[in-house]
Length: 82
Image (cartoon, rainbow, N blue to C red; front, side, top):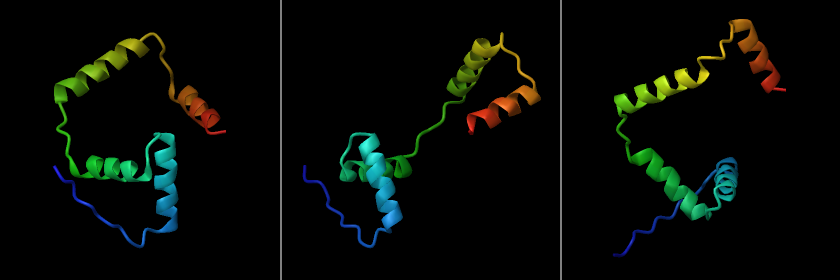
């Protein structure tokens, strides 16, 4: 099966650098990175509410023994940004 070819012109330098960086991080060519970006944008993924709820319940179980108050949370958040 023959695949289509698209030429993209006038890509802003900043966007190109971000694509290039993403490709390097993901060990892909820039072309493959662009295809992944298009797929992630065009192909919709149906959310499964039961899966989302189960993930939330699992996270609650994992973190149940580690309560944290707002002050501790804000301090941890601030320290993480240094």
